[in-house]
Length: 387
Image (tube, rainbow, N blue to C red):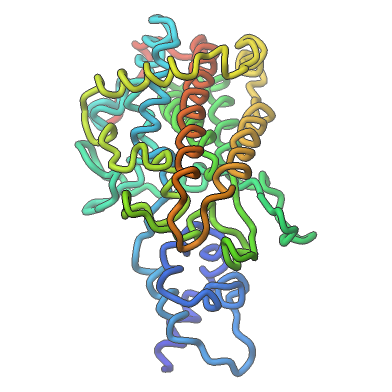
């Protein structure tokens, strides 16, 4: 017992960060709902004289030694489709300019150093040697770089029951996808380093896709019969366990939406080096959702901030995030889904339609963004190779 308490207090300094991250969701099924509440993980302290439940200690110990499954917006398939739609919308000169910046890292990251392939790079760099995660396949190194995980999300609150109170943290007060996209645009404008441009161009291509996955821009707060007690946040749907007969590997609401509501459940597009299937499906999405029918404003208006010397498009990225957040509120958290149950057929149909539209929209917006930024990209001869 003394050893158990020693371990607990040794790692209690990590508890606050643990409780606010997406790290605790994989352990929710190991312990009772009461144990996962704020008293053990958010406040990280026990009342005087209280005894630590064994299930709580188990969860803390696991968090120290087991790597969590990261949330991957759209899986590889969705990111490849977004980038392919963008590529098809750009001029050959703009595509060549983008590929010239990304290409010198091909030796280190094979298949991930052109416009389309680079779309999955930010997820692949999280892979560690021996990882069994679905996106850690194919060639290339395993950088085990998880330090940028917060860049993939912007946790805009969805709090229909008013549970957060007056002490709620502003949603854009720290690193997030909106913040990282602002940094990327700034670097692409201001830097004369080809290495920096290569890095931040990869960040921009990937995170603009993440920004259009509704549960990468939403943090739900609930205490009701449908979702249970999630009054301290659902971690973008990771804490909402679901079941699925057709896709048993999709065990939570976030995973369902990463797979575009089952459209990419096997991620077969992401597990192949063949581009033809990606090109074919991207063309189908573009035909289903033509640019004009998505009610986009003229590209020159939307891309104005990208051409500005200031290079600050934070307001635009935030608006795009709130648009996807509205889909989270109306569809992802909408009728037809509840904790522990299987989403209804009507829910899956609505979700798949929303995902297809958002992937097309993200592709068009990525194309406009890259076209506006193409003039900032250095000549190919100046781009150093990564060793």
